[in-house]
Amino acid sequence: MSLRRILTVDNRADIAVLKQVSKPVEAVDDALRALMDDMLETMYAAPGIGLAAVQVGEPVRVIVMDLAREGEEKQPRFFVNPQFTWKSEELFVYEEGCLSVPEIYDEVERPAKVKLTYLNYAGEKVEEDAEGLYAVCIQHEYDHLEGVLFIDHLSRLKRERALKKVKKDAQLSAA
Ligand code: K1U
Ligand code: ZN
Image 1 (tube, rainbow, N blue to C red):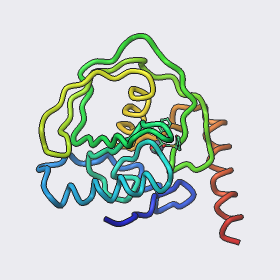
Image 2 (cartoon, rainbow, N blue to C red):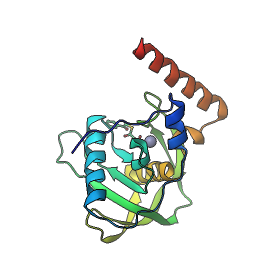
Image 3 (cartoon, rainbow, N blue to C red):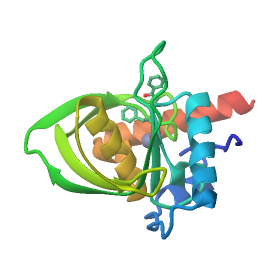
Image 4 (cartoon, protein in one colour):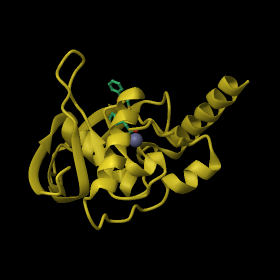
């Protein structure tokens, strides 16, 4: 397993990759499992609760997640080719963050509950209901597969302020 670099929005080349629509996975094989292992290690190290493959420069439809709290046993989850089959009309607001938009947190409103299908680490089809943080996180990560960042849900003013801050922070930490 190895740690991968997480692409961030202070870098123009990284933005071009993050804006891509990720391609469907054709087979859940050992090469894909190696990518998922690297993503999980990278997510734990960041630390984060979710990560999409495009965030490590691989525009394929793969997500990893672990919503276990500190001190709880790890609960890694792997999603290949996820699809939503239903979204509630009821909405839920949550203050989101993103490893590709470091140190920016803001409220995003999304459907409170979703139903989804995906292939797991073994390549088996899973159908699941999600609510609470699980629903928030899977929708945030699914957005990455479509080239959408959580700041794209904010007003133009807030998005531009966020991008400016991320760039300034990156310059300061490089100096
Ligand atoms: O960049 C990402 O997609 C990961 C992101 C996932 C996420 C967070 C909050 C709402 C929706 C989606 C993160 O993990 S940001 C970091 C974070 O939330 C966190 C880090 C350590 C402990 C607890 C949370
Ligand atoms: Zn994100």
